[in-house]
Image (tube, rainbow, N blue to C red):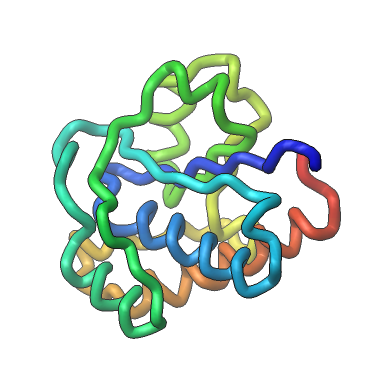
Length: 157
């Protein structure tokens, strides 16, 4: 068996968007029989929420879809992640800039915004500020579905 394709989802605090994407992607992969082919995690670009659990509204959105995120705690992106992960999928332009700045040239060509996989250049809006977890969830599902199709099509790195 070949090694799994390793995906790191990234947002500002790792309590709303990136853990939502992490657990949606794990669920989609499981439902499509691809859970052994992928290794999925999430991290923050900032220290604001390190050690905090997933935001209660994110937990609620995931639970309503039958997805558990039990035990997840916010963690910070580290320089060592540049070697450990094949693809860094960010939620917005600020995350893209911060991820590239923090991880350096080693991640060149391995960073993308989530909604690019859904055919959009839009950012996934941060529900911490918008309060609209439903729209964020819909964007995350669309992006993760597109990402999984991209992986299945073999166009991954």
